[in-house]
Length: 472
Image (cartoon, rainbow, N blue to C red; front, side, top):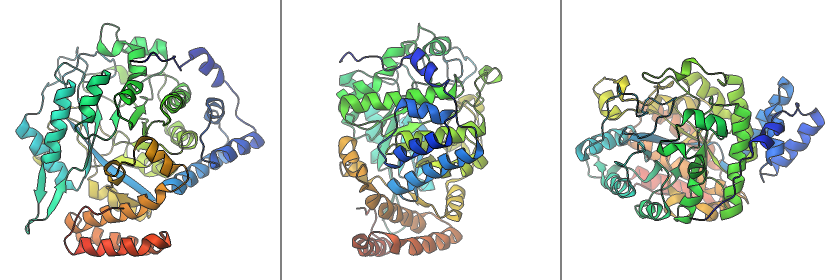
């Protein structure tokens, strides 16, 4: 493994976030840079973190909305999390799955249970999932790769034999691996590999991650995705758990992380996640949080990250309530989950109208079904997307950026969103959602690039005639 220079200078970042709110003229200058869609430096990012004036915040939010729409169009990509096991050697203060929490029901899905969980996710209409593994010897690279291959093999068919249920892309959230282990996982055909630093603030990291645990090694985790790139995984996902330390410090650090990946590998993170700490089973941490993030600051976090790393997918999860998600999704979010269960065997339990809090990592804020979330998006004229085309056509890593930075990726995102959403309407949606969805597709179709309209129209017709899995 290559030795990398630590890109988190705590004292320097602390100095940056003490900056005053930018004056209107300075804000316009920063926003003008952002509109070029080349990203922002840590210094400009820190200045935005201190915005307080409602008028200036409105300018920030409007710019974030505009940039997201310019790059990806009006589509929102869906995924579902699937927890494979909850055995963990770590002792993170904020997590229900910490090793010292003896009240948690530990379990690892059997092959039969894995099939049942995946079938239930497929039955909702999902095409992409993220497999979540506890950080323990029970989740080595070989087990991760074997699980990925098993999930890809699970199919569901309709009454005439058409394959309507399949997972087309699997992302991974697991412990940092070594270079050779990343290669093993990559060989299974994964998409993005996520490792969240949780907090970039070194003293806080030490407090919440005991040094005698796997996660206690700050620098191993910090460079885990540099190592993943060395192992051939060119789509990586970073994130911070907001509420552990000053959110401004974490936002600037995320930008530093993105810039380090860009510097060494020519491509920044494929996704950035920004979950807030939520209550967790038998976990008192949430009751003593001096750095709890307000809803107003959460909105700023999302908008600022969209400006600072414009081509990165921003992931908003069901940790947040439906009300919060409906509001902040407009500020630059590009990926969300829905109908999620975050306990071991959670989809099976939900099908039986059961719920075991002692199997869950934290409490969800949004328990709406996938279709309920879709109906909400349609009301705002967003196109729900289940697209996995970029992964499957090799538009990943640097190749993805070659399409995204000139603005070409939108040409694929919008029609592929329509095609995959139409599949959902044909195979899973209730009649009223079908009506609203078809109306939106017909309304938005003429707005695609002229050269793509007819191709998309033809493929929509092919889907209606029984074909599946069509994309550009």
